[in-house]
Image (cartoon, rainbow, N blue to C red; front, side, top):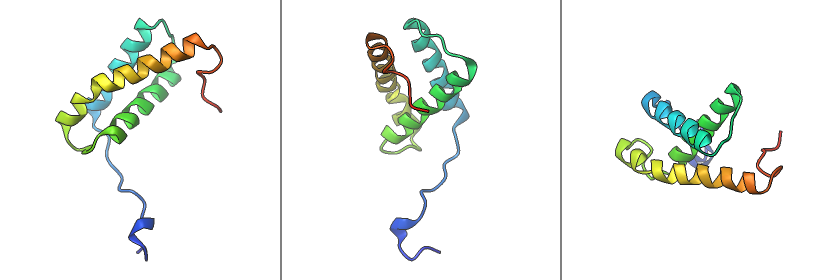
Length: 96
């Protein structure tokens, strides 16, 4: 279908519901601990962003053990981002 394999779109991966829930619980807990309250739709955006970051970071996104091992990295990344945003108000918001 594509003349150059480098131009083919990346394969579509199904979301792992259990991992997505685990990431959602992590996002909710870190936001609560950092004193950041989000509207419900923003919580889902944060959860999706965190899930995508986790999948992108993994060498083998299909390996549940590797993904679970990366959860502490994800937590530290999220916490650092929230603390940076709190230290410099107005810089933590994403552009529309």
